Amino acid sequence: MRRFSESYLRRTRQGMWEDSRASLADLDLDGRERILDVGCGTGEFTRILAESSDARVVGVDADTDLLSVAANREGIEAVAGDATRLPFADDSFDLVVCQALLVNLPDPAAALAEFARVSTDLVATVEPDNAAVGVDSTVDAEVQLERRVRDAFLDGVQTDVALGERVSNLFSDAGLSVVGTRRYHHRKVVEPPYDGYDVRSAAKKATGEGLDRHEADLRRGLGDDDSYEAVRREWRQMGRDVVRQIRDGDYRRAEVVPFDVTTGRV
Image (tube, rainbow, N blue to C red; front, side, top):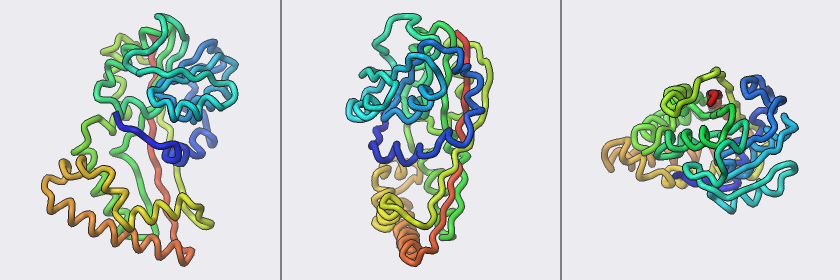
């Protein structure tokens, strides 16, 4: 399973669900008594669930460092555990949810079966469609390069990171009856005034560090070593252009990530 840092989760989820929670309507949060958020990480989504419900809300994650952050959030219980071997008895919750978890699991069907086991009523997943991400930037090369790198990553990564709305097929296999699917678009913007994270992200592009973290997947997706090295050179040049525009106060970037909220009944 892929691992993420606290800063990455905080930044990529920043502002998510604050603009609208209409896509969560099928979860019937007002009517819940016991909610489990699986793969909760630092509790970004768990907090939303706690704010939107009077239920007892529990977050579970295998990463105890991330879990310690979630444990400090008000109204959240944090429990260490594996998504495919949940440390709860059958029928312990009336809603089991996850956000951006299945796309990072080698066997998402096994996790869904566990969700169904510990739920008396609903199971819901919030999964990104990474194949449909849209990017706009004042650095022209960034748009084309990000598309090329994303396509290579999708071809080379060993989990289905573009699961999106196709998760409903897994619901049926787990014996869940699909209640509905709703799409939520999460928009992330970089613009002046820039913060430390923006500056560090630009520096990582200029050094190639951002690509190097996914080198093995990208090499598989691109097909040969020469292609990876060529893309990396272009990526670093693009990063230098980003750094230059940030220095001049001219850089702007917008990214839209579609998430599909799929809800099923046990």
